[in-house]
Image (cartoon, rainbow, N blue to C red; front, side, top):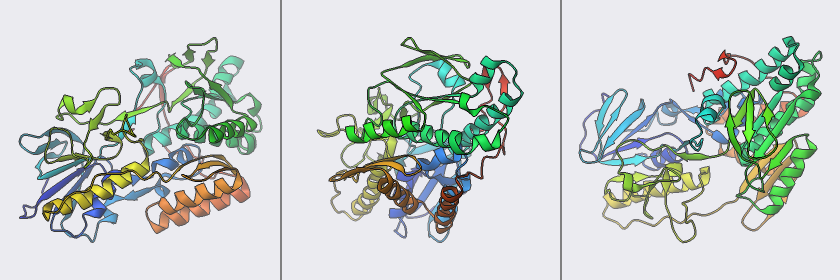
Length: 434
């Protein structure tokens, strides 16, 4: 890997997401050698991926080069690679570009889509955990309408214009709202010779509430917003299978749809080599103590979505969201420094700063610890928080200008098929480059 030898302890961080970035930031300019490995050379602001998928933003406005963030930090090294295996006994990791020893290992590998073992859904549905996947969804949506224009078979055309989103969490709700706004104000202008009224947006939730992690008031209001936008909300309905053309459920309703977007769950993205006893079977997350130290290991830590820190309040671990990841990463960086200085480490205590989701133009729900509100003001709060959280001044300016333009013109200029998403055949997709 061409990482120079040093007398400083080497801290190896796997993953440049919210948690890994927070750790790396906290270790800047310390008497340490910090090595960050990621399979992408950029940090992705995942909460806005749905806007890339629906043509609201270009991918470079929600991604930031990792090298640029640390280009004037001494003793910091970034390598573009995928970690294949960890060997705790030799303190070594194997990657696609070679192996590297470490003194301290931080696993911040995040999460991946949980298909709950349903192979057909994994094969035929779309997922949205990365920029390439969001671009694939954008291409497929637009290609469906181009194909629908040429389709003379009415049932086939309806299937091309029928979208099924599985999962009523923030991702599913925000994506459904964005698609509904495209149907209302954009697609009729782009496709005047196509009856856009035939377009259907179905949001399927296995439980009886949308946004299950938020208040009942927020859940009800989000559902009301979606229904006013024309989204068909299906609750207490589970998707059992999908063959690429028909969605099979546990109820009487099945759906003929060419596009299924799976947002029904995530699981930890573990790496081979960690003891099986340290991994929670249901969530595939790595068990850690209150200092983020992996159970059974002295110099390996895990933070963010991949970490499962159980306590009396969080019996299944902390929520797999940005705020717990950032807070864990910041504290771990401080604890690593304290430990090297011979000082006591601090236990992690999650500070819940609230949850929020946007459903569309002037429509959002916000749950703060002591205040809950919905509507226009919530929408402005959502925009401010997400804009402030973006990395890089350029990204903040571009996203803000896009939002202002889209709001005034009720338009989305980036509905471009830059990289066509090819179907191999009727019921199979080319999922490469994801």
